[in-house]
Amino acid sequence: MEPKPETKGIKLEYKILKDNFSRAGEASSNIKKVLRQLGIESSIIRRVAIATYEAEINIVIHSYGGMIYVYIRPDRIEIVAEDEGPGIEDIKLAMQEGYSTASNKVRELGFGAGMGLPNMKRSSDDFEINSVKEIGTKVKMTMYL
Ligand SMILES: Nc1ncnc2c1ncn2[C@@H]1O[C@H](COP(=O)(O)OP(=O)(O)OP(=O)(O)O)[C@@H](O)[C@H]1O
Ligand SMILES: [Mg+2]
Image 1 (cartoon, rainbow, N blue to C red):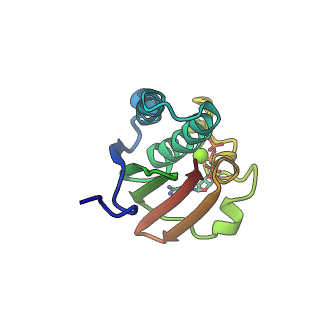
Image 2 (image 1 turned 135 degrees about the vertical axis):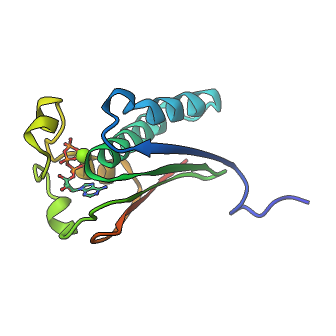
Image 3 (image 1 turned 60 degrees about the vertical axis):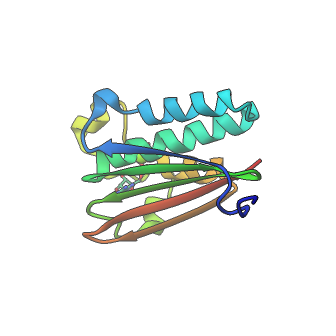
């Protein structure tokens, strides 16, 4: 029997550790590789790579650790990034270009321009963010194929 369209597809999952700058970017590189192997259109791969990279770095920098899930469905790619962490008090403010609470140490490493969330939104067809203070943050992004 054919699986339902909702359940059809491939699921990738990555554990992202807090403060792990040396391995940051590995999940998004692997996702890119898998999408290439599947023959996904390169413009979609580029958008997924930006979205997952920024999500990965945000978990490394701003959370206590989390997961990235990628669901490759017949008609779309869904990305879910969820973490345990301090959460985001004011999502509207966090979504503004240039807004960042990154420390000087993190800025010296080249992060903290305050462009991650706006770029994630721009790269997605659908973008949802939910955050609960002292619990964590969940971002869901969809790219239609
Ligand atoms: N997963 C998260 N948990 C807690 N706070 C977050 C999370 N993601 C983003 N934020 C908050 O939202 C702000 C804006 O995030 P955004 O990704 O746009 O910029 P940044 O991470 O500070 O810098 P950049 O992404 O340009 O390196 C962050 O500085 C942080 O305060
Ligand atoms: Mg960021």
